[in-house]
Image (cartoon, rainbow, N blue to C red; front, side, top):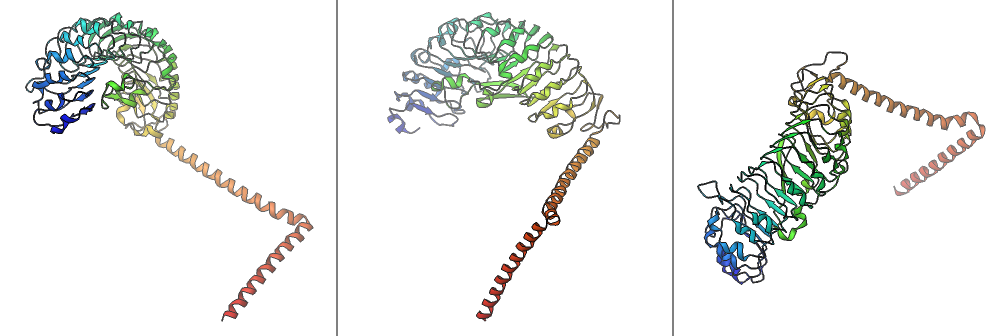
Length: 503
């Protein structure tokens, strides 16, 4: 690091992330009294700065500190860092690990984190923390907006978060929580994102989620919830994403899901990242893992703001698929796979104009695939495999891109892309459909040229007929023709005269 850095007394933002810096970089930094944002993430493999972290305690104006993805353990964090930096609003300590061990910050979360009372964002994810979440961390941080503790190992019942009334993003994915969902969440009026997936939570899905007016993303997958899907969820007008997959839910799919406004009319979701930009670095955004299009993807930024999805897969849901789901015209992803659903595929699905991913596989659906669904122009993932469907497979438009895996396991289906040809009169093969389509095109061409011929005949007789019927029209016509011939002959004669004169 250049010595000149010491003289930049008015420097407010310093980003040294993802650089293999050599030597001790802290001495040049602690002498910057105006520094407000410091990013030292991913300085690996050089860790010379770690023993000197105590020097950062002199940065009294520091508001954002990013130490992600470094070899930092609990002993490397000086007490003064959590005591002196009273202005700190953002602290990132995720994805830290020792050189020869995957464990970082092993042990309980130090209670001293509760001293940072102005924190808006605290990220301690993927650190294999154990024990319990300190009480003072949950009681003193009344201004905390984002709490990210995923990828740790607490193995306790879900604690109370009643005092964190400004919490908007609570990420507790894969932390070993057991028991039921704490009712203290009803005291978080501005909560927008709740991720408690991949835990050991049990009991029923709470029927009080609708009392949280801003809750837009609920991720409860990979737990042990049982019972039915609460009807009260249908009253959540701002709900964008609901993931209840991989639980033990039973009963039928609520028909009133079509009451959710954000699934019927496209709207933008303003996440916490956009609400407190002064506390965050430009490259840090709220990230939400979602399973869509057959893959587990991480959504962030603009794609997350407009993402809508319903995932009820891998449960024990029964009954028919409600036709009312077809009214969810702003839904991008729908996954009902691995249930015990019966009945037909609703024709109303053809009105889900925004749908990109539709998975109905591994159920007991019967009947044919509605031809109307070929109107889904944006669909890129379609799976109805392992049902009891029959009839020919719709094959026009973008449905030609789906391979055999989208339809396998249905003994009654025939036509491309399956090897089974359609032979029944009621199940015309795709080739015949294509021939009829070409015949339709040919008929369209015949109609086009017929119109041209008729227009020509009508135009011809519109000119000739008056000349045949009326003498006056004939005289006028001949007079006009004679005048044109006279003018042309005079001009041509004059042209020849000028040529002779030139010669």
